Amino acid sequence: MKKTIAIVCGGDSSEHDVSMRSAEGIASFIDPTHYIIYKVEIHAGKWEALLSDGSRCKVNRDDFSFEAEGQTVRPDFCYITIHGAPGENGELQGYLDLIGMPYSTCGVLVEAMTYDKFVLNNYMRGMGVSVADSLLVKQGRSDEVSDDDIISRIGLPCFVKPSRGGSSFGTTKVKTREALRPAIELALKEGEDAMVEAFMDGMELTCGCYKTREKSVVFPITEVVSKNEFFDYDAKYNNESDEITPARISQHLAERVSKLTSMIYDILDCHGIIRIDYIITKGEKINLLEINTTPGMTSTSFIPQQVRAAGLDIKDVMTDIIEDGINRFTAQS
Image (cartoon, rainbow, N blue to C red; front, side):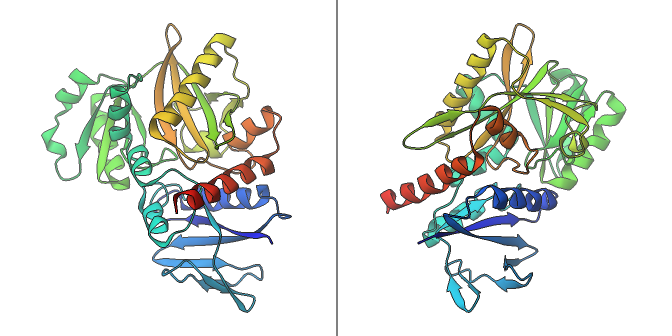
């Protein structure tokens, strides 16, 4: 019998629409000969299954079931593609753990940690991974960190971004003292904390990876060349960047990036597909920029690009993720 997959999408962050586009992509990637697919949108306090006739059905939060075509449906597996809260910060994973539902991503702790850029960077620095220096400005306490403190430690230019968030919402490249406070205020509109991060001048790369009990797959690396000041929302989603896969780098550097990506996956005990962003600075130094545990999955997103460059079938990759997630849950039960 076909297994039922719920693609969980939406969320309440600024990335809601990005998530919905990713859900469309994932629905097209999952093999319909093996799985029955539903999308479930979580938004503004509502949890609703999107049915094939265009109608919506309320999800029972006791067990994540819903009524469809005259019968009660309880998915066998949740593929989470919420970018931001509650799907990328561990909240949804905790709920699914409590009701005994297998899912596609890392567990609660890893999701919470990777969602907070400041926490993640300091943890990974402790693991010997190179990251940019940064400091935290808290909402309601921004006056505790002066402009002089920031400039003397972090320098200019620098990046100011929400510590928890994605798709470059609320992110500013700051070049002058006068632009620093407005950038912090913008970042704090997206979340409770703003991270001020040192600028790293170099090449941006991104590399996807997934592992199952049977295989370890590191995808070809993508080089990102933004046409804007940095890899902002328009560069990511409005074709204002060049994305080159495989990246135009030496074989030696490619091997080092791939090895580090695999190592980070294991250090964090990740599950499902992750994508790690790097900045390569002078001397081919590899600096961690960000870890995406629910990467974008439209047809033009980095991961599908890398899957194609690897000569793999995206349907096979999705099947690997689903079956490994179900088997892992069964083994733990």
